[in-house]
Length: 315
Ligand SMILES: Cc1cc2nc3c(=O)[nH]c(=O)nc-3n(C[C@H](O)[C@H](O)[C@H](O)COP(=O)(O)OP(=O)(O)OC[C@H]3O[C@@H](n4cnc5c(N)ncnc54)[C@H](O)[C@@H]3O)c2cc1C
Image 1 (cartoon, rainbow, N blue to C red):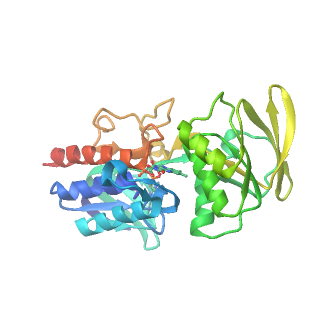
Image 2: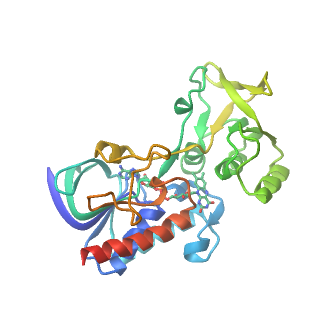
């Protein structure tokens, strides 16, 4: 097995990980390597094509892919080594991490390790929604990947479950994919986005927002044919061929759990100090891995501040 050594190893090449890596290099850290399991670094914004990124960090209003590219380009020109298709699978001994990539297995030792593995939306299985397992079920993230990165045919009529910021992002992606959003459901009394966003997108895309409504069953055998819903105790069916489960975030905490580190019981994030450090280690956690979900630029700005502290601790 190959072994290597760096000053700081960053796991996760999204906005938080890349912003931290750039800051570490600027602060004089010699060797900084970012591991990213996808083919291309950049994290979620890479497949989130609508504008809405970059106000706090670049003072610009950018689309997701442009924003992601700025971070990838910035990291490469700062001298960060970005290893894609490289998944950190386990912690090893003495501050090391085991990595799998097309080149094989590698153990990387580092003076400090920064975890920036992000968060994901809970998929249908994790929400325990009854029904069969027909095609046509997505989260916003998987919908965006299928639409923008893989150009797949999605469907024609969609129901969105959840009414957070990201749910409205799903409406825009569905429109791009030629799918009509027929309804957005939330069990809450009210949507959870900014009023103007709900108003403008509701008017523009003309979908029905149904509050205090729960999904009780996915209908369909091979392909989704509808959803059974319950509202004020009354059940009814909405015909659709696509369902998008949105929001309801869970940190990508597998690595932390495998490392045996404490996990916060509410947010399921690693337990960290005010300096983002896992107590008693040289391991830090940043970005949406910690208390999701925050905007990308907030993750990046906070990550830079932590990176400065990590650099200082190495000095
Ligand atoms: C649909 C959608 C729309 C959004 N719209 C906006 C918006 O308009 N404006 C905004 O500011 N924010 C938006 N956000 C939020 C924003 O995308 C996130 O806040 C931001 O991406 C978080 O950055 P991060 O680096 O913490 O995590 P991520 O972007 O999730 O990056 C984490 C990276 O870690 C990698 N990774 C995970 N585990 C491993 C491992 N074991 N080994 C190697 N690599 C690993 C992943 O592949 C991923 O690339 C949106 C999010 C979604 C889902």
